[in-house]
Length: 333
Image (cartoon, rainbow, N blue to C red; front, side):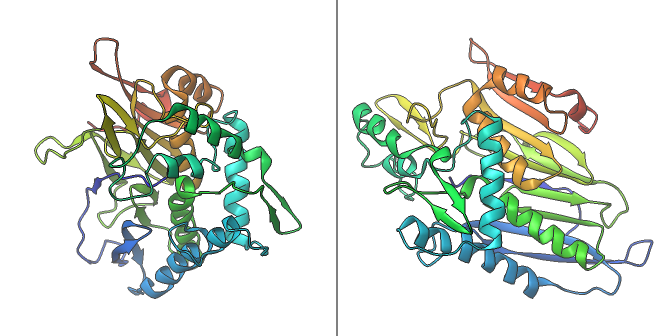
């Protein structure tokens, strides 16, 4: 599932010297079908963009379903290959969230995503909403049916894995791990809206992140739903307000319910999740879009390591919000 999410990092993009003589280095570019922005404070201004590009390529070669030669694509096509360490880490995290959310997060929904047309740029143009067809595909869905045994993937025929719902967050974590290995402790990494912020920015204040309102079009004069301070945490957002299509008056979003075979149908418009791990924040955000408002609230109350900001519609169509107590203190507007 490819999420589209826009945000603005409210700090300067210019390299400069801070009070502790560290130099701000910035990298940006395209990867994983989206854009990335990375900023970090370095004692001597070392530029690690080549190493970062290498990490991005390594993830693509392992986990991208849009790369026909990637490990996941070849496994999905039935090749018998040993999995690599990246694949195993993501698989285990996907299984963790699958179990915790009682199946609401499921990385085997790829046949359904394909059937609904969301892998195409012109998704929805030629789709016929056939209930029996989508129901029949459910036999090829269920993460519990897929296993790793001795570094080999056991996956039933016609089933397909898709790690897009946590691969961007995982990539953010990997780059963060690399920067930490270089003794860089003040940085911000953003890939497609998934963010990890450590330490302080170049102005020696906590990183400030603005999250867009869940609207199809961005209003430059009234863009942000909220702005928050983010330090030593990750932030991921998922929503159903940009990637969808309408058929015969019905709206179908790219968030697929693995139990019904249909796009998730609840009041949620957007979920923002804060967690130590960007990969897990990414996965939980997707799961919560399927679970809906009340189930998500109850889940978070039982899991103190997760913070959330929910935007949803009331019975009369008005926007409502729910902010977990821990997250309230982070918001600055």
